[in-house]
Amino acid sequence: MLESLSSKLPAFYRLMRIDRPIGILLLLWPTLGALWIASGGIPRIDLLLIFALGTVVMRSAGCCINDYADAKIDGHVARTEQRPLATGELTRRDALLAFVVLSLIGFGLVLLTNKQTILLSFGAVAVAALYPFMKRVTNLPQVVLGIAYSFGILMAFTAVSQQIPPAAYLLFIANALWTVAYDTQYAMVDREYDLKIGVKSTAVLFGDADKAMIGTLQGLVLFAWWLAGLRFELGVAYFAALALAAGLFGYHQYLIRDRLPEPCFTAFLHNRWVGLVVFLGVLAGV
Image 1 (tube, rainbow, N blue to C red):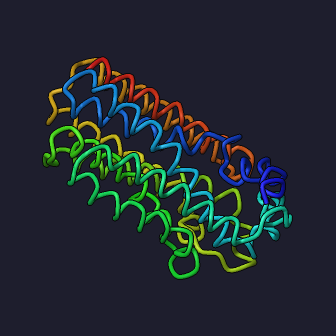
Image 2 (spheres, rainbow, N blue to C red):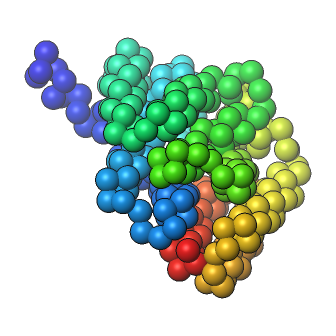
């Protein structure tokens, strides 16, 4: 059994997307930013480690349940046809088991915080597990993903102060909208395939209005971040970072102008710099 597991380790590594850390970064920057704001400066080292490791573990768990749900779809899409379940290197049972194990590890980390954070973690896992299946029933699965990717912000506040200040919901909303924007860029890459096999997404829903909708979402994200900066009394450096983030969003619009798959994917990947810039703004502003 151990020999069989050992032979599958490279496939599990790819299943969890450890070799493609973009999802970790998109989840990490806003979560750490919230932790810094909640702490009023440098957070406790134990909380920093818990949330950093928790981000890696839970994003990996999300990839496992996503591939479990998409096992019969990924083989029909050029970008995903080499994923471990699509090639037969791993089974759906393997993916489900990996999701459970990783979720338990994540829960173990949360147990090191407090009651309020533990209660929020149940909602976070439930929404994360629900997201992959939403692609069959609604054209708004990205909204569900946005909520899942934003739970860490609320949990950061409860871990520090056992409560969620009203302004924290501005960060939650901003991050959820940002997730919808960049995951729509991601969905534009596969839209041709999704239309053929019946997978739903905001890219399919928006159609020819996709660029305008992404631009609108990006504008709302900046507005929510700006309001949050005012409420948390962040400094000038934070608002300068938002101006830079606005420029990066403009560059994304340039990349997706012709709706070509490769530039759309580049725009999606480029959001890691948006997250980093805003996080650095928080560090300087808090």
